[in-house]
Length: 93
Image (cartoon, rainbow, N blue to C red; front, side, top):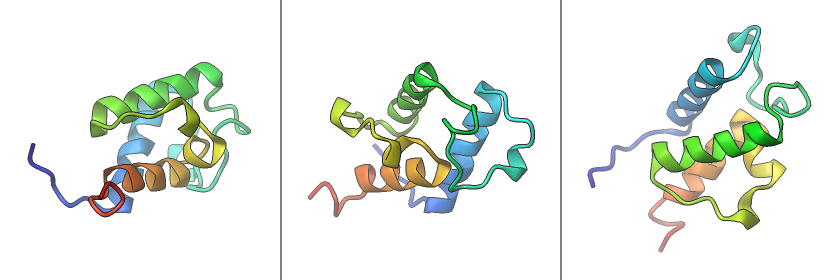
């Protein structure tokens, strides 16, 4: 498997594009990276499972049940950092 060196900003843009195409977001450009996706009504509990599926299929990582936490999945920033931690060679060493 060939890995490209993507940055956190690249991941955030991919996540933002996923949210825009799969959930109702009035103005995706106005969605702050730190904003709670649950509190803003963008995703619900079923939406969290869709985000998990997106992460697993897009980045080839497994999201353990114990990792389905607000700090990992409730904002673009949190999801981006979670993905970086999971795919970083240092984190997996």
